[in-house]
Length: 476
Image (cartoon, rainbow, N blue to C red; front, side, top):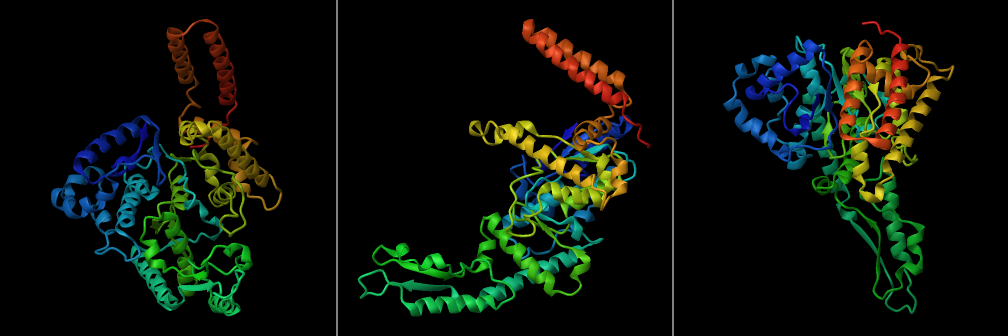
């Protein structure tokens, strides 16, 4: 089955009408050990009403649905109520505040943790698709993960500290919003006055004395001093512009918002005693800050529940490297390798999927070869992980022992999916499915095209059967 909770229902929904259906559906899946694939990334296709869910839950749900309405899933309504602060953080504009609630409770892997932790559902066979394939979420360094996360109260307090920090910085630099360099009126050439240059440089030097340069500052550059830039009559040059940051994070510009908040978080985090023992909050491409890491939450679910898997469809394992900062230096394959080192069980829990149709259509006709590029990046990333796994030192023996072949691509793209879909002990069932597929083709097609397709299918099926027959038996 394929579920898409971002369409507007929680994995363990407190609404009685939904909970009743879920209870029957999950019971059926547990009884027959049926696999469920669920979208698990803050993106993709979502309900257009997602901004209204927080308001609906706070204003109407408590009145309409009593706690006994949700007893089928043993779901405590207070689990939701506790995460609804009485007031919105001044750090979050309404849009971000509302979307944050939706993704936290409908899509975040912890929402599945709420379900899997309930009696009767610990054996549910589920795969969390895409491994949170969001570029901002994949800017973590797993080597820096700690054992504790901030509590909800601490998280709210941290947001307030970040807000106060940005407000103080905006007030501090309000007098240095613009240093303008102009041509002299009497010069026949476009001449920039020396005193204006010195004034601009003085302002920049004062900023450099701070622990960090505020974002929004356009530092002075040698190229700006070139007269060629100011040939037009009456032209001005802004050598230094400080744009207040609080107004910027409230605009509908997620990239700018994340850039500012990530910098501010680093400043507040390093300056606050006691935070070092906790995991830092993370951001997504929507500009939402989360208390809990999506990546670590997924890894923990795969570790704690034997039938919980994750796939890496739509995740670009390898891309052009950048040296602008420590996070961009970490390509996704490097981050995945570090996660696998910390959670060796993922060697048997990660499935390779391409999400080929979305990749094929994302860029339109002009990007018709985009899928080929993505596939090559995925193979490159897995090869690099495999090379690091094969190094004699440092060697993660627990991780290597869990690999069932010496080819990581085969492990993730063939062996692990066979186990997740339970095809390994049921080769007879696989034969029946294969025969049914061929019969459908023969009903609709004929001639040389059918002969070619049957030959290709026979070869592929023979290879699959050879892998199944030689697959080692996993201990329960």
